[in-house]
Structures are given as C-alpha cells and as structure tokens.
Length: 98
Image 1 (tube, rainbow, N blue to C red):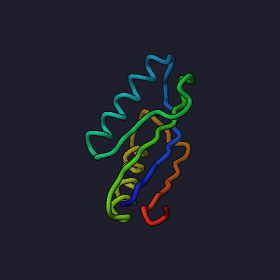
Image 2 (image 1 turned 45 degrees about the horizontal axis):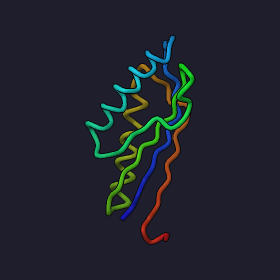
Image 3 (image 1 turned 90 degrees about the horizontal axis):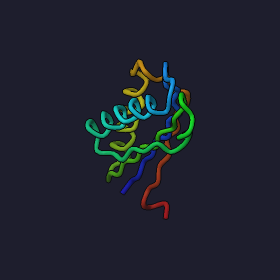
C-alpha cells in the first residue's frame, strides 16, 4: 500500500470576501473529487480571502499510480483560470517504510 499526498498553495483571483472564497474552493474540491478517487480538504489559510492551501490524499497499491494521479491533479489545478498555484509539494508513505 502506498499513500500519496499533494499540498497545494493557491492564490484565488478576484476574491473580495470569505463567502466568495468558499464558493470557489467548494467548486474546485468537488471537481477534483468527481474526477479522482481522492480525499481533499482546505488545510491552511481558512481566514484569508485570497489564499488557500489544499491537502489531497490518495491510496493505492502502486507507487506509479499514486504519482500519476497526483501529477494529473497538479496539472489540472495549474490550468484553472480562477486560481494561481503558488507552490505544490508531494509526499509519499509506503507500507514498507513502517
């Protein structure tokens, strides 16, 4: 079993309130979840209007599958016009590491 995580720092363009931010993030999280079997959550900057950090986790038996899925999600986020990806980091936990 391999667990992969993607931590993505975002700037949300044109946002003037936390309510607008929540609407945009909800759409992004829903889109990611609909396209991929992953868990997604906002993990930092909940009180800032134009910033958000998302944590995305995936579990698989294949390290290659985990890496491909996280790379696809990162590319999909880069293509979105309503956000700017400031940083993204991947990390992995392999069952054999324990």
